[in-house]
Image (cartoon, one colour):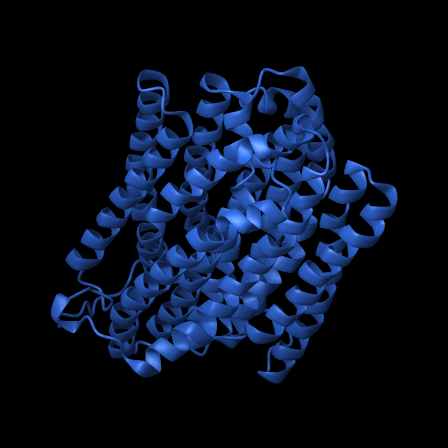
Length: 458
């Protein structure tokens, strides 16, 4: 296998941390935003050129779909942490083993999720009180969209590897190209072919397979240690265990949010169709904000993992605090935008004034509190970079799953107002953030990290 022994220009263990974390995050941020915008085009095209029922059908599946895609994103983040750590330690052989094992593991898990997701969709949507007039189209949408899970698994796997090496530009280029295809196909299928729900689902999976192919080609042609070779594609049991031990808890963390959100969606579904449609439109803001902030979380995990692997422990807290600062600012700025200009945003998805008014009840509460989630997610990302995922997952289960479910059946059941339902988000973020911050301090002390490095170099 050919190795690139030259200095890596994307090295995450040297240089100004403020500058390098921002430069690392910007392409990733744009990639995340584009992915959300392209996904939002499904909802926007259906809402503008289809019907309110079609909008509600697509929107009512969002939480369910994220429940499964979140696991794939977690596997990708686990691969990212491992590759970053061993690139920092200059263990090229392990990087190669992780690369080849990670591809197979990602595809196998995605196939399992396809079967589970398709098999459970109807009973789950019924349990969630999905409106009868929305159910059939919602089930059909999920059937088609889940055919794209293997492609999504490959893209997240490749994105995790390239990001671990500091390369966040190529995933942006690949996603931009496939996303444009997605929008064009959305418009063609819905407007020209009158396919509505089926059309936007087909457009999504076609674009996902395009981005997956592009990222695979990139990994095959690279000269870095993680270069893919068909003859080396096999599962190394040790690396598979390492990937699953990091990736599954990370994926479970994502799934936990979605599981709790399923109960929240059930609460939303207890209101009339207008409120369901308003919530579906407004929830698109969550994806935009979270994915911008997630770029900094990926930076925190990648930078900390590389520095930890290279033995530069004194840089870890500096990378953490800078990433936390950037993600908090992103949450504050974007949250303010949605509070002030929410009606204009909601008009992209519906022209119905009642739907817009219903959506604003969510945007006002969420927009005022997005920044709080940074203290939780940035700390979890830092712990992932240090190889710690099990304890944070337990805290997430308690703070962001058990607590939210209890809230739905107690506080919301008592007040029965939509605001009492939405308030559980910031409160659960605060509780979970406090617990993971305490654990992060404990871990840092255990490995001898007591203060950030004072040098201007990472």
